[in-house]
Length: 128
Image (cartoon, rainbow, N blue to C red; front, side, top):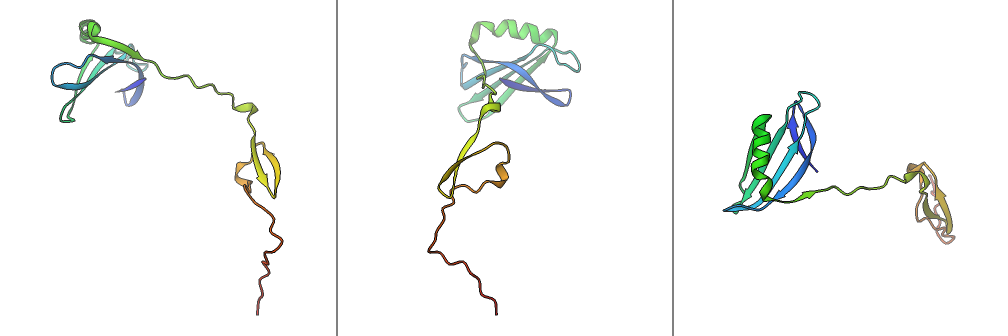
């Protein structure tokens, strides 16, 4: 999923990969059907050539629709973002403290992970 800068913010768009044309390595097309603020239709073509120079072509409203119709025959596929499930409510972090397995439910900042009791260590500090 791509983004187009419109009306002072980044707007989520539908992204398409295009067939690279002459002297270009990568061609991508971003399509914003309607900006939530101004209501414009925006199409932006981004191309990268062999010397890593980036060129963009941006069209708005009626010219954007005509530009999209003209480029539809060059579309290879649409980039679809992966959907990540948000099931974090039943997750517990198992950790080890002094050789005992415990579970952390919410307070991650107070964890003491990987502590082992050492009876031979003498930590008495003498003050003079």
